[in-house]
Length: 82
Image (cartoon, rainbow, N blue to C red; front, side, top):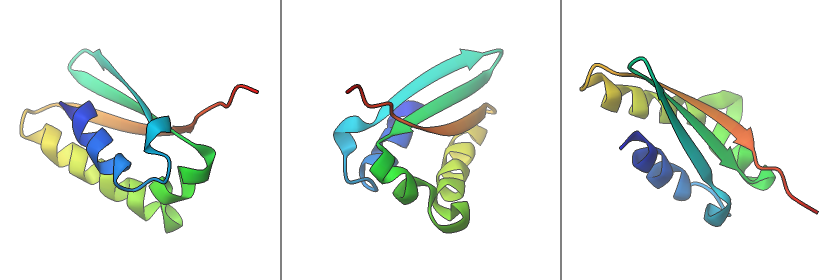
């Protein structure tokens, strides 16, 4: 549910939506979302001074608060295999 929300938001921001990878790990009532995007899209997801990723996190946190869950969102760059 959090994964789908994050995917929806990020797909509308990036230039390469097919390179998005999201893994969801649940542990003791806490959910960790690991977001991987293409190198070219890192700036679009993070934003100037981290404003965009901060806003994305706030949306996810607010959605999770309705169910009294703790959710974290981490962003990584996808590794290209050459």
